[in-house]
Length: 377
Image (cartoon, rainbow, N blue to C red; front, side, top):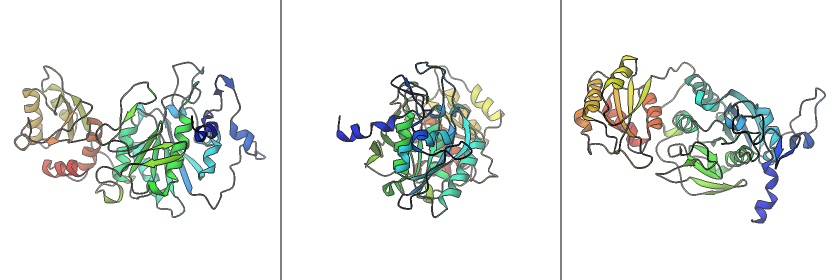
């Protein structure tokens, strides 16, 4: 272990301040900060030498709590943003921090209302000249979708850094505190500017267009299988590898405001013996677009493909993606997309294809134009 790792071990204080190696402890922040007359923890005064970072909390496992430090069951969204900030006081040495609670839900319950609220607030904050960057805490289940959505609608090149955890704040070896610390470090780093929305988890820096969750329980769950990492970060010290993939931020054609209503797009998984019933049902339920998580190179049975093509003739945009973890879905390879009126997702997985398609449908339902969006983003 390097000396840097030894000196930085205090970063591992648990978010809720409950467990370190099985020993109950009060939050470190309480010992290091003075209490106000009302009994609440008073934040330290801003240091003019430090950048200003705003932490937006949405819930998730990083804000979760369990009845036992070794209990696998837990409830997401139990710890508030102020507890998070106070439990990792070392992060205040990196930036002047303040927090806002956008929501406090498990990310399996993420929804359009929170997305629009979050995107609106991020744009408001980044438009302020004294705000350097934003950190967003989120659950792991849908963080890749939220990250990609924000990547397309945030109108700034300032850092937007998302982070999460696989273990709740009360766990024996909670991963949230260090993830949060590293996220603050990246948001405060001038070199993070212009790289789009980033996701910092388990020492790795992912781009919003590339990461995906690969394990239901492992701490090293996130991978960027096609384009690789944006960089790494070790106890707040980043190493940058590359820039983002695709148009984003200030170069993006997409935007949302408080009045935006995102169109319905459904994902249907291709299987053996698949018929067109679910495709037709999705269109009947009001879907303006359908993403097929196809087998192999975005393939599906002939009967399903004909059903998707028939719906495309009625104005329902069909996108062929793949249920396979890596590889691109090529246009006009095994499926004649020109003839069928379908769109090839290229490097986007089904969940990200759905995000892009929903935003594209705010502008057009023309498959050729939407294919161009998939080419560019």
